[in-house]
Length: 129
Image (cartoon, rainbow, N blue to C red):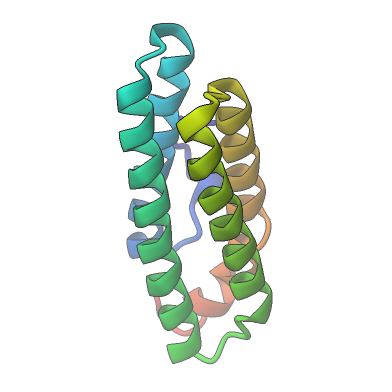
């Protein structure tokens, strides 16, 4: 899942680039399943959380600007950010790298191929690429 392919493209260059970056962070986290570099894990979790938050803000603004209903997107984003906040706290005392990695792989795959694909045709029909 962490490797980008055209099947993940939502047809909007800015969003695709942001998704690629997030998937890259998740791939790096997956490598920690072998190396167990916990300092790097904490850095990556912070990057995934912070960059995810910036991505969600950019995505929601883009959708609002073009009149796309953002309620479902926003709810999914808020749920994800709540999970990440809880996970970042848990990771300080426990180090469930495999669990965190599995969740992130699942969440981003489902979100990009589900909710995010919902705006692909909508935005593309308005000339947003």
